[in-house]
Image 1 (cartoon, rainbow, N blue to C red):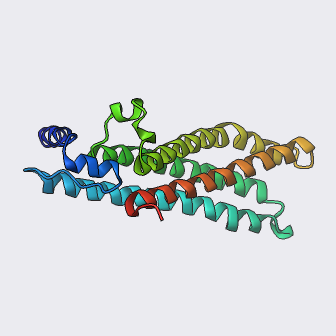
Image 2 (image 1 turned 60 degrees about the horizontal axis):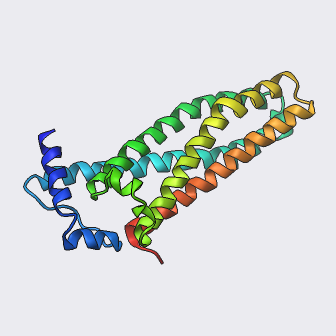
Amino acid sequence: MGYFSRWRDACSAKKNSNAYSAMLSGRIRACDHGEGSVVRLVYLMSVWLHILAAAIWVGGMVFLSLVLVPVVRRAEYRGMAASLIRRTGLRFRWVGWACLGVLLATGMFNLAYRGMTRADVWSGRLWHGSYWSILGVKLLLVGLILFLSGLHDFVIGPRASVLWQSTPLEPKAWRARRQAGWIGRINLILGLGAMACGVMLARGVP
């Protein structure tokens, strides 16, 4: 806690400096102080974990949408399709939520490292300047992803799976499957949008 507390004090002290002004314009510079090398190493590890979790989550969604679902629609897999989709979904649910948890934890640490505080969120500063606006859009996308993931994984998805296995030919089973599929696709698009925002935050607006 000593390292982190001294580092946060150093970041807060720079809020009225040129470095903080540069951050607001999108040219962020890390705080430079006594234990900066230790904190920067932790920050780099956090960024690595953030990218890894995003890659696993988005990659898993792409695999389910573009590989698994089209394969199980073939006639030869029709008898096991419902069970396979259910088991795969349950397995990926916990992988996906673990990745989302890592993304939230590392994302908050990365923002704190760059000098952002809760006051910046509640003061409306998120929408002042290109950097803050992109960050605000990314946070909104993350909120939508969390909401839709919970809706898909714990409400619509399980209901669609049960109906598919019990009454696969009923219209309500088809509707539930379609709802679950569309929520998954929308979530994937939102995730790709959040990744695009992350690239712009790191490399600037094109």
